Image 1 (cartoon, one colour):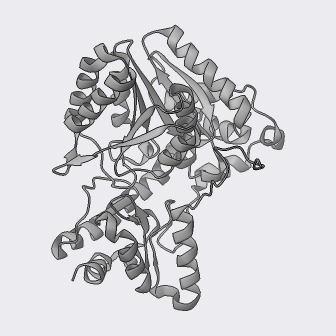
Image 2 (image 1 turned 180 degrees about the vertical axis):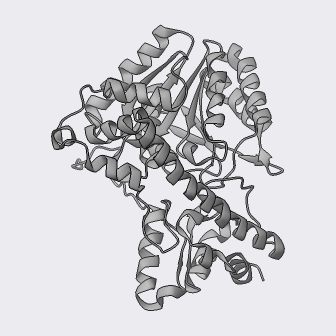
Image 3 (image 1 turned 45 degrees about the horizontal axis):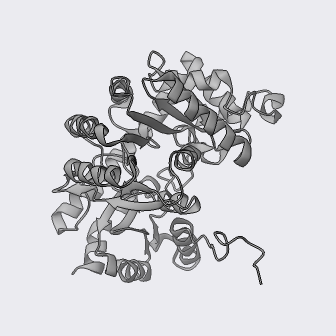
Amino acid sequence: MKNFLNDASHGKKMIDKVFKAAVAAKEDERTYKDEVVNATLGTLYAEDGSFVAFDHVWNAFADIDKVQKAKYASGIDGNPDYKESVKKWLLVSELDADVIATPGGAGAVSATLKNTLNPGEIVLKPSLGWGPYKTMAEEFGIIHQDYELFLDDQFNVQGLLRDTEEVLNKQGKAVVIINDPCHNPSGYTMMTSEWDALLEGFEQLTSKGKIVLLHDIAYIDFNHKLDEWKSHFQRYQNLSEQIMVVVAFSTSKTLTAYGARAGAAVVFNKNPEERQYYVDAMIYSARSIWSTVNNSAMKLFSKIESTPDLKEQYLKEKQYYIDLLEERASIFLKEAKEVGLPIYPYKEGFFITIKVPDEKIDEYNKRLQDNHIFTVSVAHGLRVAICSVSTKQLQGLAKKIYTTLFA
């Protein structure tokens, strides 16, 4: 007898490790209060433990007319002023790029996977990476294959190129996910030389088939170089027609508006017709899945981008937290080095990840929880969200973790 659900959906169950760990931490806090270090939450928290919602973002939101907050977006692909604001924000207005609004960066990643690969085909994702990449691939019947992210504490360019060539030989097309800058969960940012070598290698491989680079820039507005980093996108203008780049932008993270679910997919390719095929497919997917993106969130982003004084105030407020993240990271990294706590190479961003053998992850995570330290299990490690842990709590934390796990 048939199930109510189809064969692909029957038995599916989502267990989100982040939310599960966060709930366990909250439960522990009821008894042990300030003894608990909750390093599970991937959103900004202030030094006093309060959730950060930028004043200059949400005060501006309060000033938006209620009708604009209530209305649908003006188009399935997003409001025209929003799409133009995204291009200006990312400094790509003068480049050949098209934009479609998506519900967060996640919408851009998910819909791109859906529209670029057939069921049974392979997507290359980082071995150490955001968990939902795997979930999204499986939702569409796509095979997810890991590429080894690091070699000697640097981005493993040659390893990724070998894996890309292997996939091209199998299926004539390769879709590759890269999360940069401020990689989740390692905090690594690729060097210019690494990007140059990678893109040059991709060009050499195009004789074997088309390449889609799915570039997840969720944390771009928290990198140390700020707008200077965005000059990187000019490289995409010069790639051959055999390479399409889709940049997944998260307005949600940029504005501390996580629940507002706004983002964008920005597509680069020299051939305008190919870009239009992508946009048309994404619009079709949008109408069938999320319909339209939150109009008020798009209006808010456009308002901040187009109002110089407001944007300047926002940038100053955001810079305070970029500096705070750097201070928190320096505390943890200095102590980790002193005690010999093994971590993946960190440069900037929200997270630092401890190196742990896969077979020990659950055991080590439980051991930390028994000592009131809550991290998130990821592939090959335990993620510490410095974005949500105060400088006071970070002092001594690396040593305590090392003593608990390795001493």
